[in-house]
Image 1 (tube, rainbow, N blue to C red):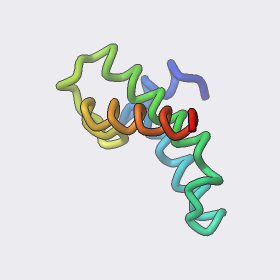
Image 2: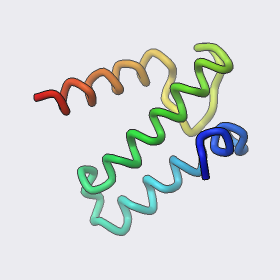
Image 3: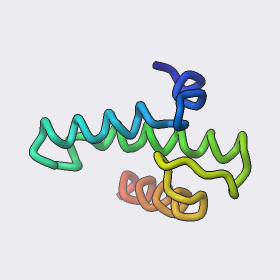
Image 4: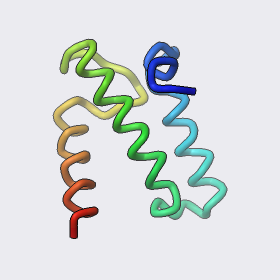
Length: 80
């Protein structure tokens, strides 16, 4: 599914959160092997907050402020 479909799912971004859980289960909970899916979820969550505002909620995403911190940390980790 694409970003727009994942944003419209109920709850928003849920397919991406489920994909992470499936990946972790298949890879012995090695987060490094599912990193691309985590980034995809964060992209969806970021788009969700841009569309609905930082006070919106979905069970699939961390709060907006925490999401931005996590995205910044992941970006800094990739630049090292």
